[in-house]
Image (cartoon, rainbow, N blue to C red; front, side):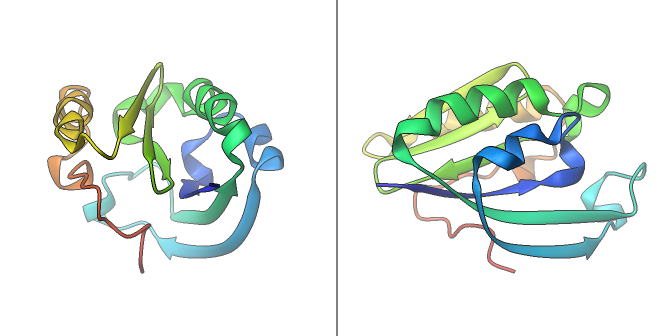
Length: 131
């Protein structure tokens, strides 16, 4: 089963990864103080689909591509019915949705690098970035 997620274009130092996913929708939001990204004016949110056979490779590419100067501000994630990839710069969590207690470790790591806790409040039944 394919994965679905959102990639924020401004979170990427290297945007090459966007060529390797299927972008199904794009929304642009004004960056606000709540986003905690004062160095940019907008967030370009690409809803993406990733084939199951490419998921690990895309996760690794995203992990290397996230903005190194603001690594404490960004993560990416995508999931299907079985797994949820949560990707930070240099760190990837693959959560088995049958064992959602593993979300605690992924959230704790995000907070430890400076991402606001309300942004890493993951759950197995979360919808993909409904806006």
